[in-house]
Image 1 (cartoon, rainbow over the protein chains, first blue to last red):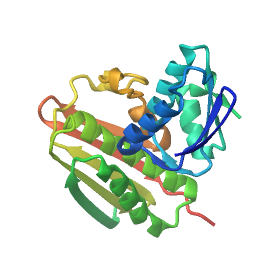
Image 2 (tube, one colour):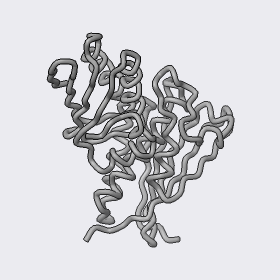
Image 3 (tube, rainbow over the protein chains, first blue to last red):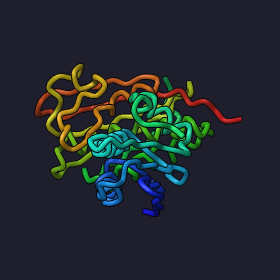
Image 4 (cartoon, each protein chain N blue to C red):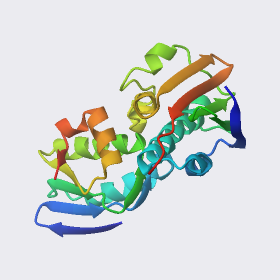
Length: 99
Length: 144
């Protein structure tokens, strides 16, 4: 997974499909990116993510819990309309910033 | 209601088949020239139902998932996702938003809610030890 880091913010570029099958490897990659405790903000860029079902909710919320424990936040950007519907349905927009 | 076309898939209950199933059903639905939004709805709902069959029905043990689809003359697509797995003890509870039996695995508990949101009708039949059948219907809005 491509990423960039600026100060305490990591931006991860999620590609492909985020379902139960791919969730484990994406979760592992994201956990590595935020392993450093000085990371306080994770931005998920979903521009090149072709598909996401509710498995993605679990992945994003799990990373949110990790960062929230250290006072950090998670944001998403470049969501397509379909993913946004899943976001709104789950209420994730209340804790995950959409930018 | 008259059947215009139908198909049936049987595949192993492995996660790699989640993508196969949703793409196959959406490819089947393409013959009615649906909008991209409708196709995305169908793919997502099928993905949720098949994931449930693999993760909960068979608890990631070997099994067979059957997915069938039927196009009706009134423009309704019917989809069935069937497993012969463990079944659901309390269907109403299982369909509650955020209910999950596996919170430690970061399951969101939103699978049935997503199916109900993206499809016009969702029915679940299940009993412990007898497997689960999820029936979904979607009116196909045709693209211009």
